[in-house]
Structures are given as C-alpha cells and as structure tokens.
Amino acid sequence: MSQELSAAQRHAAARYVGMPLFAAGAAGFAYALFAWLTGGAPGNSVMLYMGATGLSLGTFGSHNDTAIAYMQRVERAALPEGMAAELQGELERDREETQDLSPSPRLAWGITVVALLLHAAAAYRVFA
Image (tube, rainbow, N blue to C red; front, top):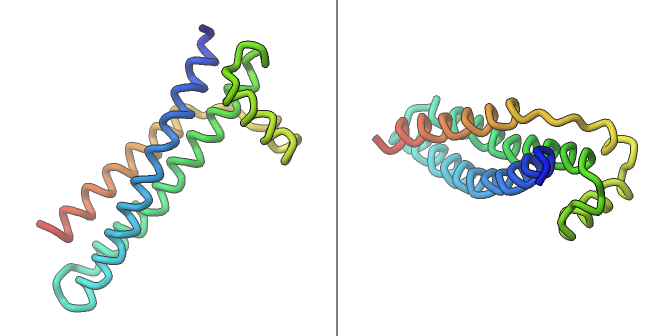
C-alpha cells in the first residue's frame, strides 16, 4: 500500500472524530450557557465551549480535505471502492476546487489536538 493511500485512509477515519466532538461541544455549550445564566459557571466557560465546538467542525473539515487531497495522488484503480466513489463525487460536484486541495496533515492533527484541549479546559471550568 502506498504512503498516500495509507494517509488518505488515516485521515478519512480521523475526520469522524469531529462528529462526536461537535455533539459534545454543542451540548457542553448549551449546559455552560445555562449554568452561566443561573450563576453556576464562569462566563469564560461559555466561550471555551464555543471555541471547542467550532474547532470540532474544523477537525472534520481539515481531515476531510486532507483525505481527499491524498486520494487524488493515488491511482484510481488502487483506491478502495468507497474512496473512489467519494473522490468521484467530489470531482463531479466541484472539480476545480477539489483539484486545488493540498494535503495538510500537520494542520489537521493540530486542529484536532487543540479542539480536544479546549474541550478538556471547558469541561474543567464548568464541571470542576
């Protein structure tokens, strides 16, 4: 298996970390807002959860774009069926933008780590 295919599969799987992070961030944001309005949590916890929720979406998006960029570097015949269909769908939707993507693995992992840290900091501020 080529390094590009391995990286595409890794980022395609990692993008789904953003979904539960987003759900946790949205729920945490709602709880922190309620707790702040009733005097049970500091106001900065609301902002921390807002940032964590936004970066959770960024986690999905950055891993998704990186996975698609890596998919383009692999021969179509070497791509698993699902990945080939996904790439084809992206190319049909917006060929020019898709072809302009470049992989950013460090950025994708960096956003994920910062999102996790923000979640931890916000949870600590609200629940500790």
